[in-house]
Length: 333
Length: 307
Image (tube, rainbow over all chains, first blue to last red; front, side, top):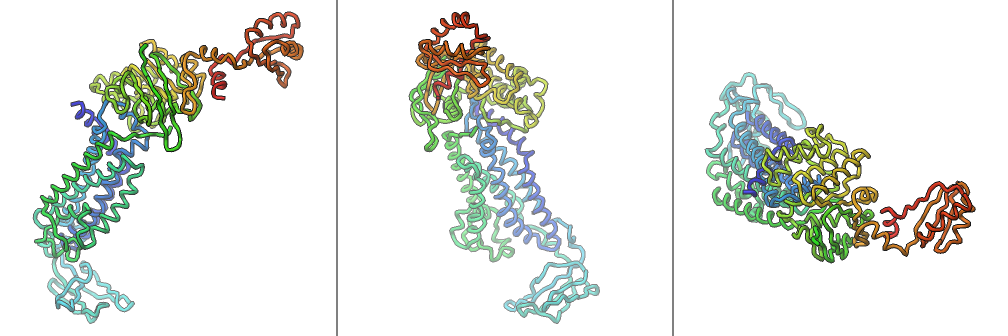
């Protein structure tokens, strides 16, 4: 009972501190920026493209590790740096309660931020009308794929303003006012690959603004779980290192950003692999992620992936608890 | 005799730097001063006492308990660290209350106790101000408030009077004496010796991690009887006085200061000098205005022992 009580007291105190911290503010602004980007691009892009590129790569791979690690590093290191660790450690509380209380507060904030990012990006992808509402005809530049013989998008869609093309070192203005929905105009131009170009005027296909069923929940779950794991990583490192964030950043860049995107089974040592297994649905998302390295690797089911991540959390918490109970912390006067 | 702190062959080092070396000491209840120059090992000793670190060799018992991460001990012990660190986002009262709650005190009681404790250290008027807004002296007192708030049996205080103005310092000394009268034991460390002298006669003197001396200040001074003692005699005619004193047995040197107003005598036979001086003064009438011996204070003992 005393253990739970002291854990809660430390949880509440750290939550209060985190809610006012600069780290939290920076994380919040970063999430807002990503959601804003999603909202800006969403008017001209399929929701699934936004959801996978900004969601899986921008949010899950880039932002979630940064937020988790930045806030997680405060669990022990902050008290070490400010030399206040003496106070809780000379009170009749378990050191594990100290760790769990503060880490609990951290994952609450990390969970809210990462979850908000996931929901924000998904909603923006489906509903944003910031740069076009899908109701008015858009002009799209397309190229004739020489291999497949299909017309493919060559540039983002635009509203009915004159179209400027960069061709042979010059900018060419192409008027589009007279184009109506369904019109196509072949341009007497080719791109650098020698592919023919044309303009297409069409209304946005509203169906393409729907994310696959269950995407939002899977994405939300993966984001929160990712934040929890990354925060635990720096929280644990903070028991032994004064600046865990430096090692954590090195790890993130090498493993979570680079290795996880190299084809092959090596990416299974990254957390990203397991998080993507939760989000990825080969039935609906293959087209939007064609060419991404993890589409070439055998994937786990979302449940299998979640179980493995939970086991990892349990083992890591046990190691952190043992370490903090035995560690001697010294402060300079 | 029951001892509150007991160590045997305590040793602790940081890489190649020795913090404590074979320190064997027994500390009785009451106020004890832990003195030594900077780097002597005082803070390392205190960290071992409060269980912040473990010794590499030897044994330590505080109130019969092994201190490292010992919850039972922390119920009975208060620690005021030297480092100027507080939770700056909290007010002084909230800070003390938070730590009281961690000690197991219920919320309402913790608040009342925190207020009482802040009042005791003289911060009643400013207890609701954020710690970040406190002066250095006020921060020092908040640290002390958290250490005494849960009414511990043993209080460990590291350099408590540093940075305090004379009035507050006097008040803090009174507070320590008050706590002693309540039956609490206090171990105070300081490298400013007169601070400790104002609090207690009992000292533990350590240097380079080793115990140099322990006991009552006067007893330690008596043990140093082989050491010469210095006496200053302000006089109107110092030369005649110096000439007579230099012939006394036990006197090893007599010097006159540049202004020719003070005679400084170094003697191994202070009682002999005390006995002879009245008749010399009566005979020569050199205008002696005072008899000042600085060797009885802690500073002098410290000088002799540490060198």
